[in-house]
Image (spheres, rainbow, N blue to C red):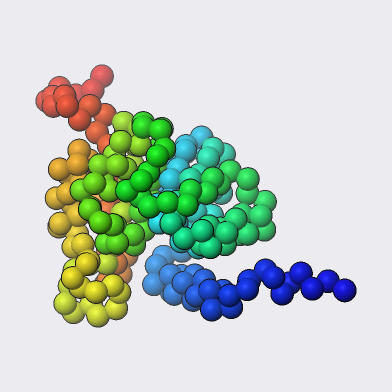
Length: 210
């Protein structure tokens, strides 16, 4: 007799949490596959999902590239959920990093696209987190931030005190060396900002690139 299934998820609450996270995110957001397909991701791009959680974006990101996807989350149990999902789908290009964004140790100028979904309001320093992401991105690489708007009318979501309003996020992105490509309101509560690492952040020129 096979009793193995008893040991797959010793913590049923955790399994329920994952199911809840996945379903709630699907309710609130446009399908992750649709969002990823709209992003400037090419088949050979190296991608990074910071605060990957249960892999809501990691999995479609891994399906969109033949190169590597780094899934970063301090919770090893979350990463094991991503591992299970990847195995189910036969994806072998995901590398799991059990750590916080502040400790990001990926090689500088090596990533083409970074996803930071509903994670930046949890970091100890927004400036440090964004400058760390800036360093690992290649010149011309993109960062997609998704956050809750700081609006007293929107009750749902994290406490108002820790939210990052879109204007504040744009300001810190610009200070960190990014250019803003576009801001989108996903729904009443959630917005995205797509930013790009300038090709030559220290060379400001009015001449068009040839």
